[in-house]
Image (cartoon, rainbow, N blue to C red; front, side):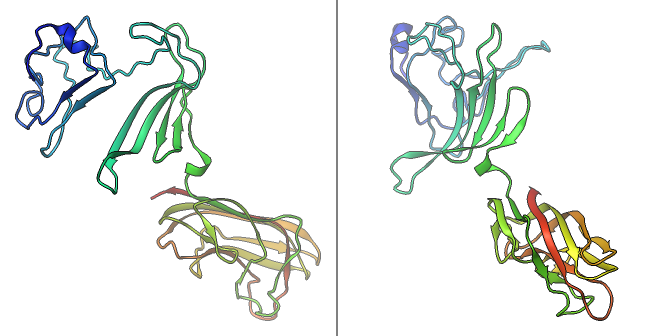
Length: 309
């Protein structure tokens, strides 16, 4: 890049580009040096490069941008600062307000037509509230497409946006009379609970009163049942099944002293789901050997949420 006769000429340039810089040149493999010896931080310390684009390009294996601090002081470090003002003109301060985007870090790739860069994931810094004397309250939002997926608030809370949360699902029954037909199969045989209503879903799908998860990983599963027995002195067990296999963790037992007695039992488990095609359902049995007695479900809650990969 030729050295300008006057630094003011460079500041008036709308776009400042360093194109075709190769590895080994100043500013890349050797971060001690500047990209161009004519552009020194001391030379522009009292001015700003004004324009809407600053592009460092290379056709080699990688592009690096260094911010290096060589000071031995414990309180010194390099800064990458993004600044937003509502002043309307360069050098004019205007107080930022709630919902202002203070800065963005974003990755771009080339589109399918191979004719332009298109946006990829991004990190947004968004003001949340009125600016104070020495601080602007804000939160960090993580995007994977046009919508935020994860937020870290000014208060330090972490939450997912509903359509960007961990996979979850719910099935339920409310003021129902769902008969679990144990009399047909007899004691000692688990019968799948059916006739449930679909609740909240995010990523998880329902297949015949069973959950199917969108991604393999570790899941927390909770269930609760309120029911009554059609016989006296009857005991029932309920457990979680994955791909037709009893999981054992998450099981519970309940005894009903008289026919028509109402009671509840529940269970919780942390289970690894290894195949997204596997059904995850609830099943009930009357333990023992011999003729079985039906149980009627009045209320039921069956929930699943992903904890991690």
